Length: 135
Image (cartoon, rainbow, N blue to C red):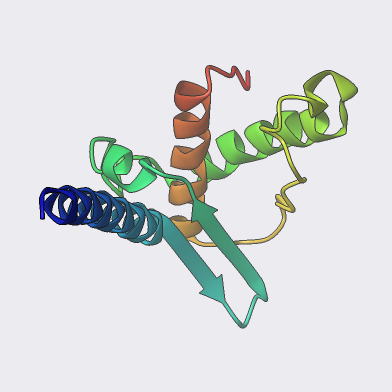
């Protein structure tokens, strides 16, 4: 009888632990979904997807939409994209895994304010989160 109680207690502890693990996995999955921003415009055929844990919560603490002009954001984004893309091609940064692929951002295309605002803030977040300097 004592063995049955001991075995039953161990089984319940294992079940409780696995239930906690599943709950934490679901929380992480939900957080990742909440930290995904997708912007698409079918007429211009572009799409931006930002999947970065913590980006949304970081974004709400930044300057609000409308603070910067669109031309300011476009100029900054172009500069950041050029540096970022150079690092994608550089063997010096390849091992870090921070620069997986180039960003196709053309300065002669009007992506609109929202895209430029989010891209600019992503670059700020990227620099702060990963201790990178894109200047």
